[in-house]
Image (cartoon, rainbow, N blue to C red; front, side):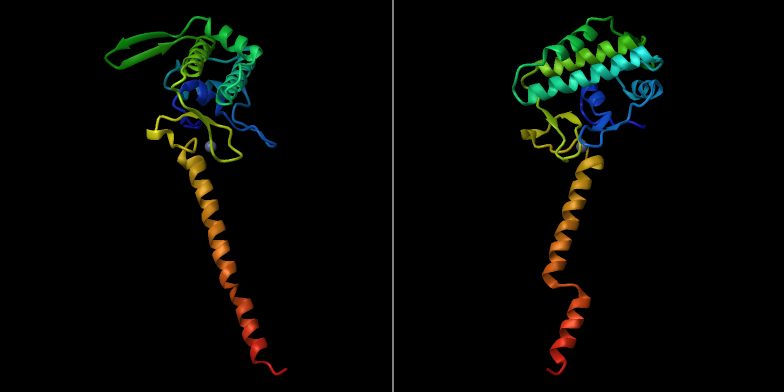
Length: 199
Ligand SMILES: [Zn+2]
C-alpha cells in the first residue's frame, strides 16, 4: 500500500493525499497513474478505473473542494459556494456498480463513477452533525479524519505517520531539557579543573 487510509471515510482519505498544505506542500497525487493507484488501494472504489488528464484534474479539484468544505464545517461557518458546486456536481454522476458473489463484493465503474462515490461520501460526512471531523494534531500535517473514539479524544491522523513523530520530538525535547539541567560532561570536567586550579 502506497497510500494511507486512516481517515475513516474515502473523501477524507482523498484529502489526505496532500500530507501538508503549508509552506512546503506534499502532494502524493502527482500524475494520473498515482490517482489510479489510490483508487485501486481504496476498498470502497473499483479496481480498474483509468485516469486521463481531464479526470485527474477534476479529481484534484474535487479533493480541494472537499478539503475546503471540511474546513468550513470544522470552523462552523457557511460552506464556500464554489466548493459546494464542485462536490454536488461530482455526486450527481452515476455511481459504481456493486455486485455480490461468493468472493465478496465486486465494484466496477470508471473514474468518474469512483469520484461520484467519493463526493457522496463527502456529503454524508459533512452533513452529519454528529460526525466529528478533525485535522491532524501535528502542525505540518493537514490530513483530516473522522474521530470515532470514545469521548472524541483522537489527536492524530494515524499513529505511525504523526503521533509517533510528535511523541518522539517531545521525548527528544525532554531529554535535551534534562541534559541541560545536568550540564554536558565536558563542561563538568572543565569546571572541576577550574575549581582545582590555583588562583
Ligand atoms: Zn497527521
